[in-house]
Amino acid sequence: MTKYEKVAGIIRKRILSGEYPENTLIPNQTDFVEEFNVSRMTVNKAINMLMMEGLVYSQRGVGTYVLRNSSFKRSPTLANDYTGLTKGLKGRKIRSKVLLFNVDFPSEEIQEQLKISSHIPVYEIIRLRFVDDEPFVIEHTFMPTDLVPNLTTEIIEQSIYTYLDELGIEFAGAHRSIQADKPSELDQKYLDCAADDPVLEVEQVVYLKNSRPIEYSKSRNRYDKKRYTVLDVIQ
Amino acid sequence: MTKYEKVAGIIRKRILSGEYPENTLIPNQTDFVEEFNVSRMTVNKAINMLMMEGLVYSQRGVGTYVLRNSSFKRSPTLANDYTGLTKGLKGRKIRSKVLLFNVDFPSEEIQEQLKISSHIPVYEIIRLRFVDDEPFVIEHTFMPTDLVPNLTTEIIEQSIYTYLDELGIEFAGAHRSIQADKPSELDQKYLDCAADDPVLEVEQVVYLKNSRPIEYSKSRNRYDKKRYTVLDVIQ
DNA sequence: CAGTGGTCTAGACCACGAA
DNA sequence: TCGTGGTCTAGACCACTGA
Image (tube, rainbow over all chains, first blue to last red; front, top):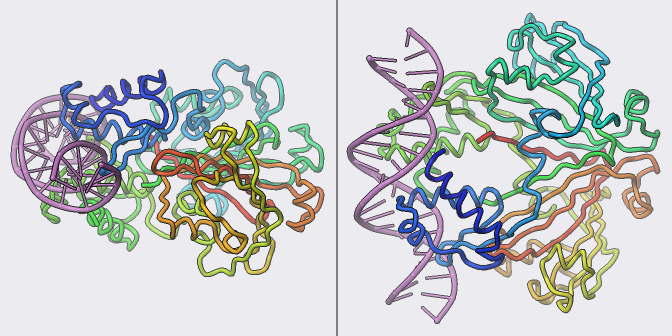
């Protein structure tokens, strides 16, 4: 736990508790320097974190405003979603039905997305995932075999990301593209949706810390089961 | 233009030109300190910017990798989208047809979203917007009248955000929620879509630098006209 | 004008990964 | 062990806002 994280934590707590009310200025950075016995750079970095969270906004010559004080869902799907359902929906009952589990050489599109050459085999996995026994999402996933050794049906019936965690694999981030689509036959059959029920598709590439893509996938949800929220802070 | 922006700009250019190839380490921060005659804090901040863009990834004890070198669209809709179409689609022909332009007291939902009390009137605007004469999106917008004086039909037929710019109004950021939906009658009539064509809806609240919400809106696109991309960097 | 936050420095210490 | 990036400091200068 770094100093600026501690400082940010304390200020965040004061905002969420209402000690610093919405639409007012919080104390200036020099005051925080004295209170917490840290340098102003550290205070500045802490406040910058809170700004990225959308909790405050700093303006030169004015001060730092509280944008919102509580109860607002904080970018709920953004940070957690790439790790799949198991972590994102803790406390709910998750299970998967494996519709396809193959190993094959990658198509050109997959080569490009995963930045691999044609001779490295990839897993192709299609899973139907249930939350509390309701069909929730169909995930179509490609992963290079050299990054994920010994994947088994048992693992993909549970959680792939839990397995990757156990392997000590760490992620740098992800690219996502979100769009609406008409339901395919697969969607209609397994997501229990009608021919005119839209589908929300999230396409993503997940990157490891060492810069290699580890996953290219498309997830399809029924339109009434999933929304995606984004926080956009102007720099 | 700050020093760290200059440094980031130079390094970015080298990455995009291929001078620092994908999947390799760029020079370490101390080397850059010597080359650019700046402090390491400044180099660090510059590289941090590139990391937020998803261009590189730094790892303690290892170095800084190049994640991707070029051609990838850089978070295209994320940063620009809240300012509406006029700025986001420069070079295309944009025009609007005003379907509704009213002033009224806000409902409870609008009061909550715009954080105003019931006695402040709000504009309610519905616009159908065309790109190159093709119907593109229906925007349903609420704005408090005290923040946006003298809005006229002429302005909303053009670009609201261009007008706000002229007023010197500046934005801090936005919250968005993205979902798929079935087409409403309005959608079918104006977006020229069939009863089973899905719609992509983006709901957003835009905040000013002084922390007040200035806009609550829902934008609906035909599913094949719009996708939304997000870059997620793990901190 | 005074007060705010943004940036920048030179140097320091530390955590981490790889050999 | 060494080289890497992450953090932190004390102090400085500047840009911006509002009175």
